Image (tube, rainbow, N blue to C red; front, side, top):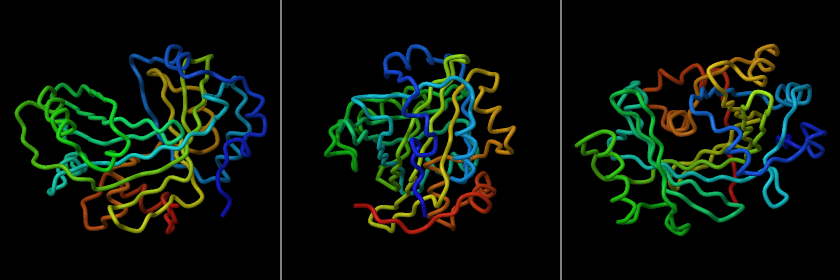
Length: 264
């Protein structure tokens, strides 16, 4: 299997102008944003991305254009976070640490959806050595964030249930003010379990206003449509076949081939 390398896929990528993180955040700070996700076979991604004619810039930091991420997701013994998502409940939550391996920075993130369907995402800096567990201070922060959005709901203790790893390249499309990410080598692992990697495919996510962006339209013209995929929920469903997974069955059965992986 050939690994998906964004610069190999788009030969002109190294010649494209760079965009820094601060400029990207300012120029593509969409107040009303629609996220669309695509699970794309690597060969198809190579063909589609190499023929993208829209002006594009590539996020670059310290000379690098592809960055490694690790996320650890936490849930209760009854898997409340997963179950609320699986059943499409409006009042749901997601808790994770996210680590940027290239800069050795880690954050504790809480994402909630309250009664008015508003999504709130908050995070605080977190010690790298604690990314696989919730400290006392971390638990206090999580409880405070959940109480502020979901009210007096007690979900019980939280433990790590899943980790994900991937490499990300970010594109900025200045004509539309939109951006897109390309995640390769996406790997899921249960605590102390066998890691599984997405085989010969990448996850593309576009972030645009209410109207589709140029990359969306280019994907559609090439027969690629959005799909339902969540690195947390779809990964949990894939690694726990007994869980209810109706929301992600089509993705799991038709588009998401996994193979055993080795993590160094």
